[in-house]
Length: 336
Image (cartoon, rainbow, N blue to C red):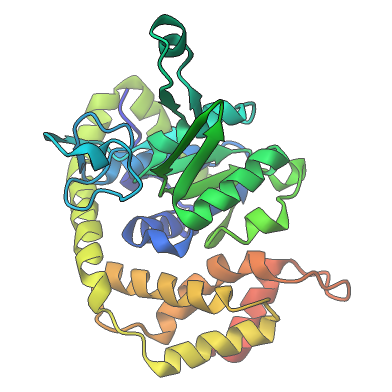
């Protein structure tokens, strides 16, 4: 069955905007989506991957390296490149019960036993290179896998040292996590690695709920026909993403916008400078999506909640949630 069309997803505008921004500029650092079950989190992520144009890759490369710029750490492409082909953008699920061997890769036991060869069997991180690594219920992920993901997400390289194997391979991906905050909190170290954090909720308006049910039912009854009905809008959005990627390098960020970002982070008491950097990158990607040549305060205002809500220190004297605190700071620091 084809993926549900991205443009057919009802409401959840913040989540959709964050995913589009990550598609335009993967350096924003991934997307975390927290909210109720059944609110379209996994549907949106798979829909975005299906929407993106196919990528060119070296044929036979288990890491889907680009033929134009193969990774220096790729053990396959370092031996010479052959034919190329186009493949869909990878979307790899990381199950909660996955073993470390399945995630990072391990010795190929079949070849070791039948041929006596020490060969590497790539894991999920290899398959996710140049695509998306999706973790549902990310707040329930085991600690040792969290530590492993932190290392790989920071370096873009997976290093394997086990069973006599010593190997490095490229592992650059957009990390996307989803979960229900009622089932546990995310470790601060991993939380800080996500560039954007979105909150999604169950729609409360009757008309919106009806439209969600109607569209889902239509898709399940006739997926091909439903996708065909949205093909034009999907193609238009795909062109918009491609144009934004090409425009991204030329979008300027004025000093006034950087100053506003710094003031906002100071007002909220965020640690370090990752908040400002994420604000700048996210606002620039949004400006590129909008076809603008320059980032303005309006772009900053739109992305600030997603970029900052998960970077706030706990304030025992302030019972309002992080989203309300960011909104209050935006009103004070970035008045319309």
